Image 1 (cartoon, helix red, strand yellow):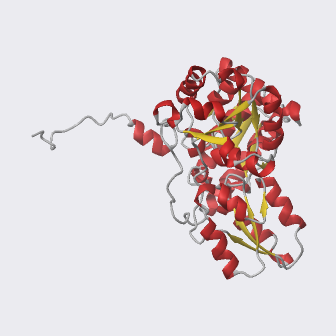
Image 2: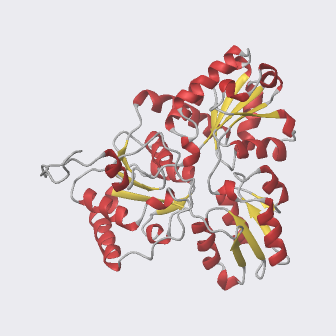
Image 3: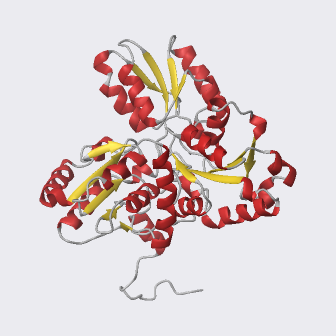
Length: 395
């Protein structure tokens, strides 16, 4: 047995796990965001607020802070602009005078900002462990293997890849190399219409629910037109005949937050709140979307509530931070806004970007220390940008 009392040198290097927990390293192979962390900690120390303000003021126009809608309020208060992932990436590109782009979101969003901004701008993610479980569900190796399966089935030449914005730079680059385009939850139908003009089939990555809902709900296809490719099964778990017959080849991925909503959630809220309007994100399961009154992107949800009449009641199927913010915003207009599910769950990876991490980031930059920079390799950036530009051309 090893003598645990033997003196050890004090010069011990942090382990990879310790660095990951500190937010200074990333684990690209993990599937993050699938557990509900419970309620968030209490609001941060007021001293941190003053430190963030002071550092941001010192940086001035050199820094541009982006805040995704799903961020907690203590972070959002320091955002220069708020929005969904693609809007924020475009906002960053429109601020060439900003040397530092601090992206309060998750890893794939910061990658997109790096792709769309100039080489002189530096994109920073306050916590490198802020990933996305959906984006992690499709790796470059898995998608390359899928393309080999499609080739062996004799259908690859008929297939146009369409990848959701919520994907890694590697997946966006794959899409660009193979003549495909990127989509958001707002323009998925337009992207699919374009893709079917280019080919007979679509490989939709990585969110199966957005792909299925768009194809069936918005484009008149049937569920039988869709097959589900499982990267963890040989051949994706599909036969050659199934691949040849399918119009939509859906990747087996999903959002851990939106995937939790169920038809039971919809039925329960209708029973509890008579006259309630159920509004959900298209990343929800097909049966939930079918049971809802309204379906739309994050920006759609916000605009729908802005236009809603006073006294109306709404149950929202999306991330809780946004739902809470909207409920507070419209309370004065007597709009009742509740979370669709009784069981509360935040996006755990999005919430890794907290005020302590933001303060550390801003103070480091103010002192001239560049930390947690997100850089996409030039070859990957080239083809990822091509796919993004195809999407922009569809607008």
